[in-house]
Length: 324
Image (cartoon, rainbow, N blue to C red; front, top):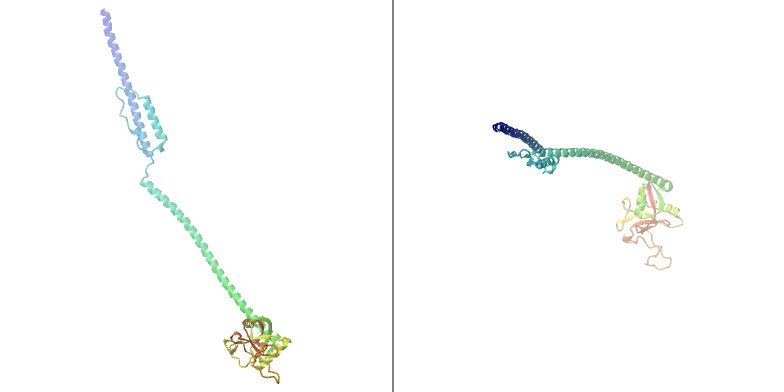
């Protein structure tokens, strides 16, 4: 009995000491493992914070560092660890889910400088194109000036040719009038068988270096009468002369403006012998001039050389006069 009590007294304290030692070892292991986990959490939280600052994301729950577990708790819950890892993965893999970061003043200045650089490049291209257009405009202006100068030279040449042609036509008309017509002193007469009004006939005579016939005296008038009678016989045609009273009624002038000093107006035939005098004019050959203001131009009859007044717009033969 005493031996049994003595054995119990020796074994029980040993067992109690072993139990207390095991419990202390367990406590020491749990404390070391829990400290390592807490340090790992702090390190992960710090890395997450740096990542959020770099991406410009707002701080979340991951930045909050838990103050630890209660003293009697040895390990973390499996569910809490899973949720924390999922949140960390979502935050890491989807950085664009949060709101856009507000631009800093440096970003604004950089953007404005970039836009200004683009505008400057566009203005440079525009200036280059404007310079090319200006160069082209200068070339076109120079070419237009040269064309105008060439056109002016051509116009002068054409005008000179026209003047030379007019001189040649006048010379040709003068030579033709004296070769084919009647030469009388220092002038020549040539009949034209074209029907023209009095003004048009004068223009055509002037274009060929002459004018409508202007007999200066009765001798020239009689010579012109013989020429017309011989040319137009056996017919009697009125032929325009260069005599008119367009300026004033009854004031007859030549085409050169000189006043007519003699006349050869037609007179009605005298009554037959034994017949009484008659005051009525002859219906076919009345005394001339009788047209008043309606007939202001003079034509000469080709058979007897008498003068008749006619409407200036009537189209008749005409005789031109050329200097010799």
